[in-house]
Image (tube, rainbow, N blue to C red; front, top):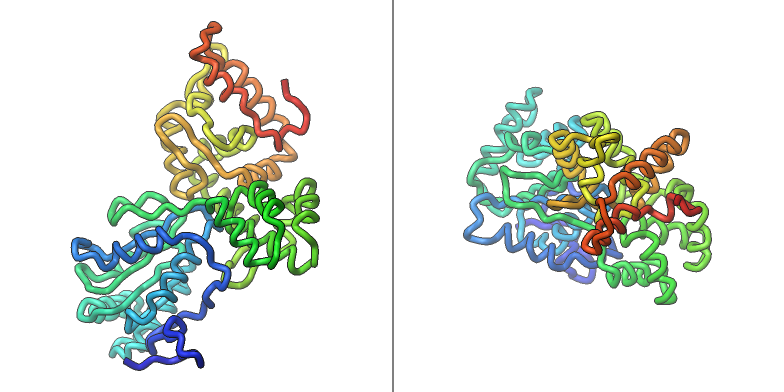
Length: 389
């Protein structure tokens, strides 16, 4: 096997096969995700796995690409070919597949027909082993299905905002960090840090990986302390997110990342946009679905049940909410972005929100309903600096 890019200290993790297009650097501050990385490996190498594909799904900025990248670096010596393919940008997808045909020196490498090139690459993959393809930021199985050989011996990793992949194995749903992981990241990223302040920063940022990377980048570039950052965040949170561009391997800023998802889901479903806007003024966890689908006769349901189910499916496809049988939840930083977008028309949404919650109370004073009443009045305090009732 011909390897290049070997490090001077002999570290095998930095040795890549000669057939590789990876230009992304390993993240020196990668934290947590150990169980997920073990699951990826077990899925791909298990003899019982009929389709060696692992999807990593989650909200934009939660660290899906970084997890796939970490897997590549940890297992680089297990492969003779590693090819990274961006899916959201179709011209880049075509270019990378054409580049793979050239790297493999296939007879079809010079043809102008992408279907012909992809078929040639697929035939090579079918005949060979020890290869790894990473399809980054795919939204649907249909985007990559025709590019993969059936029953091949190689491995495939897919990152996606979409949580619904019925055609392949259940995805790993990537969520926010555990609090200990957030604190560990800050300690490694900004140097010696007061543990108590690191906990506070992690809490206000909702343990969201990209937000924590933004915070660390700002703290380092501006030479401020964790305490200074907390003071700034209290009054200028969205400005902070827009000021610092994270390292190149992270791609977009947090505002751009979420704005793209909000725009996409709003174009696909008006009801989904209403669910997001309404929920932005509530506490982020345990929002009862009945607030949307039930209401007194004089008000009626905000969204009919069938349309609400379609809306939650659309939101799950972009990992903007988590949904169970009775409740939904969304990230508090996502709420802040939505409220900022609504600042010119938000008073209407606030009024609708208050009316909906006040009229959604169960009748009577049965203590069994108190928990439901509490949830119905559970406003997000960041959305309402002053009491609303």
